[in-house]
Length: 68
Image 1: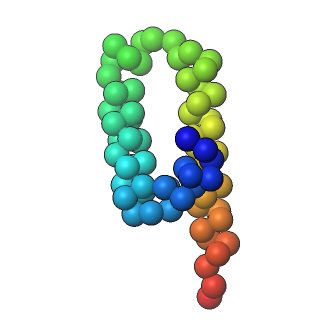
Image 2: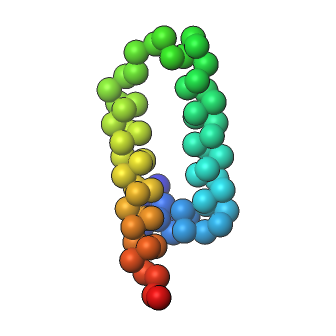
């Protein structure tokens, strides 16, 4: 999916809910003891960092767009 399309999707309410549901599912999976014992592949860490950076940049753009 192109980054522009991803940003549009995350800005919608449905996109936000989808993102949050995915985050919750990933956290529930990661908390399982058998998963926690396994090393994390470097490509997984890279994808995680990329995803977190995307959501952080969107939050910053939304905050800067607010007018008081």
